Image 1 (tube, protein in one colour):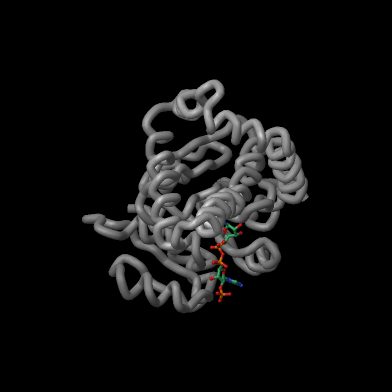
Image 2 (cartoon, protein in one colour):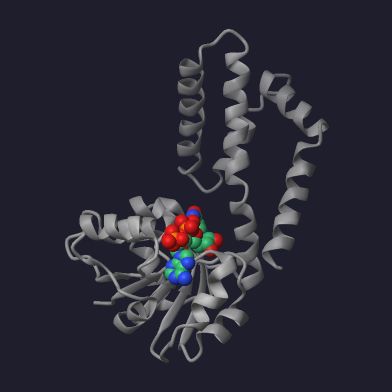
Length: 255
Ligand SMILES: NC(=O)C1=CN([C@@H]2O[C@H](COP(=O)(O)OP(=O)(O)OC[C@H]3O[C@@H](n4cnc5c(N)ncnc54)[C@H](OP(=O)(O)O)[C@@H]3O)[C@@H](O)[C@H]2O)C=CC1
């Protein structure tokens, strides 16, 4: 069975490793780099298939499939210090580092793939965007959810841009909670209501491919309250602000 190595044992590696291991009858062998000691120790303590190596190079020596999951500023230095082999398949989770750089840093590795695994990998519910198509990367990410391969590297970068919207989305929900608490509702009830309503809305969106259009029109009765609220936000320039902010993220992602 394929052995997986992870250089960078932080939040996203922990999610993928948990998805590969938790409750799996025959989990693959997983080798972790020594940095991020807390995460590594915890994963190795929970899962017998997981081992923390003495060095980043040991990870490469033990695994043919190597996931790079360090932060952008250290990525070049970390990769260039290592000796890759032609048999290595390198799967980068690092946002904003193009395939051309990754190939240069990891030569003579045989295959290099970019990916955007999601934290839901821990529950095997990631929808991992990856590029280019790769049987080996697909096999890894299918173990922790589903896979989406866009038409180009540039499209993968657009998906990276979209991931920047998570926090603002949660902030929008927190604004509604705050507004409720300023209008006669205690914080606990406000939070319970908002997380319930929008959590269930999220579940409904997953049910069918056209759900976004269908749900939007279902919740926009002509002359109704939702229509008025949406029109107010549009008039205030919210969609344009979202597009502009995403454009700025994409510029940053593309360096
Ligand atoms: N979090 C997410 O949802 C997603 C993250 N990504 C990408 O994955 C990458 C990692 O993100 P994330 O997991 O959140 O970051 P974290 O900061 O949680 O993890 C990064 C890990 O890299 C370790 N590290 C630092 N220097 C080295 C080194 N020289 N050798 C080996 N390991 C090192 C850190 O160790 P220490 O703690 O000791 O500093 C830390 O454990 C980023 O590039 C990010 O863009 C991609 C998709 C989703």
